[in-house]
Length: 261
Image 1: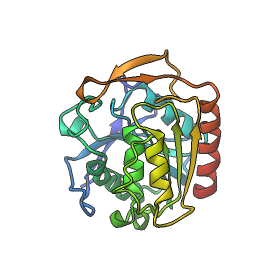
Image 2 (image 1 turned 45 degrees about the vertical axis):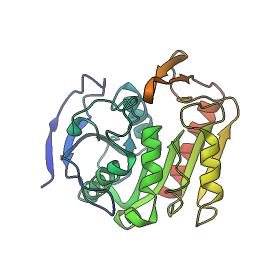
Image 3 (image 1 turned 90 degrees about the horizontal axis):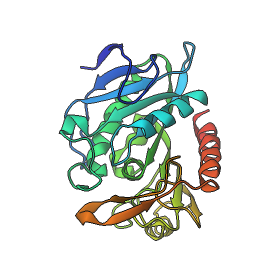
C-alpha cells in the first residue's frame, strides 16, 4: 500500500520545507525484480496543478545536493518532481566503487513503482511523466526506456540521460523519446559506447544524442575539478563545463516542454 508521510525538512539534501517525503512499492517489470519499499521526495510547484511530472534518478553517489539542485530547477520549470532513493532501502548510500551492488536494471522496478505512485496523485497530469538521470541515473533512464519493460504503458513519455553508461548489447530497444547528453572526454562512461548504441537502435530517430567535445563526466555539476575512484580503484576525472552545462540545460528544458506539455 502506498503511504504518504508528513511534510519534512530534508536536512541532508538541503531541500525546502515544502519537499514531501513519500514511500511506495517497487514493482517487478520484466527482468527487473521488485526491491524493498522505495522512499523518496516530492518537489512541487505552487498551486494545485495538475502538473506534468518528472522522476529524478540519482547518480551512483545516491541522493545528495546534486539531486536537490535538479529538483529545485525542474520545479522552477513547472514540473512536479519525484526523487526516489534506490540505494538506501537496499542497504547502501553509494555504488560508485561497487557498481554491481545496485544496477540500473534493478532500479527499473523502482521507476515502475514511481510511475504507479504518480498515477494516484490528482496533482499530476496523467500520461505526462518524464524521467531524468545522471551517470548511474542516466543509465537507469536508458534501461527504463526499453520496450520490454513497458513503462510507456505506465505513463512514461520521455527521458533525459546525462552522461549515461551505455550498453549497446542490451539497450537497443528504446521506445520512448530520449535526449542523451554525453562528453567526449568522459573517461568513466565513454561517449563512443553511446554512439554505438544509438547507431544500432531498432527504432531510428527515437534518441536525440548530443556529444560535447571538451566535456568530462559530471559536466553539469558546479564544483571544483576533481578525480574520484570508480570500480577497481580506477580514478576518473570530473569537471564542470561552462559551455556544455548551460547548453544541456536549455536542451533539457526544451525537450521536456515538447513531450510533457
